[in-house]
Length: 525
Image (cartoon, rainbow, N blue to C red; front, side, top):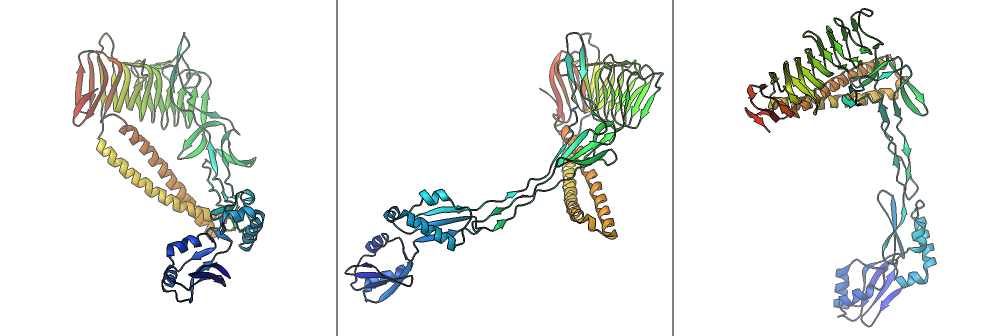
């Protein structure tokens, strides 16, 4: 079939190949290229052969390329898209649009493209000479990961509320639940929705990852409800998290006062006293202790939490010998001649007068808090509004301080251990997933191996949560200015003695600001 012809040459097609026959040499290649461009189906692939034929003019038939189809179809490697190209001129397309629509459909059919054909493009948006997206596959929708929600414990941040007559030092200290109460839930992972290629092949989605609810099996149970796994309390008590597991702790509620009627209280769990502790009596709990009376307590013997916090809503008059101890934090409205010792922080709403305070950090209210007299010792930071009083009562604040560089090294070591434990727990988690996928089919030996892996997993998880607690403790120290800090929000009266690490500072005049130790010297700002 002859395609082009003039006095110099003719271009013919035979079997899908393109040939040139040059009878008269000297025709410029650039002019020939312009002519060829008017025939979109011509694809010249052998330029050197064409150039030599034009120069020599031997009259021989020389192969120079191939004849492209009117409609080309290109499918992506992932079979998610198909494109077409119409190797015609625009006038042809306009004149015979419906015919080319049919041709496109025929080509798509030959290439097995049957899904996601863009009908709008096919009917109205075909363009000559350009690649056009004509079909799109359906992407798979991957499954959602399981979503776990736990009971949110109250934030232990005391606030001072004023109603014009009385000030209340208030906080949500203990979260009580009854048997059957909601403690958490898991929305299960989903399988997702499969997709399709343009050729109709199914594409399987990735299933969402499952997650395990972590809870104390003695006090919490899981129940299937409305397509969710719901955690509910098995007993009355207080919500607590221990090593990442939610549980319900024992809770003793004293509706009235602790006194002759009750005797001294020693309880394994948390204690809430809705009244007061009378003079000479004591309360000890393994976990949290809260004294909810707003009138305060006086002359008590001892209040102690062996592993948790102590909250005294109304404050304490200690008469010099009353002791309050907490493994973690103490929250008290005021302290007058009492002994307060906390493993973490002491938080005082209004004032401490003549008391002994020992803790990691000691905080009073930023606007109203006062530290007057007594022994005030912290390992990291003391923050208060006012120190001493106008009568210049001698007040000594001592911050032992810390070695910041050592703490940083300790943190690095801890993070390395944390990473190692996480790698171990991931390996064990994968083993557990394999075991649990065939749990009903395990023989005695395999079941024993499963129990051992589960035990190792739980042990390492406990270690991880312990490391996390240590990390938080170190980070809280590193947030302190310098290597020990005393912050005075409003005023420190004269005759106040400040000691940070080995640096002593006696205030001879009223002072406001922050003192801290750094680079072997005491700084003030």
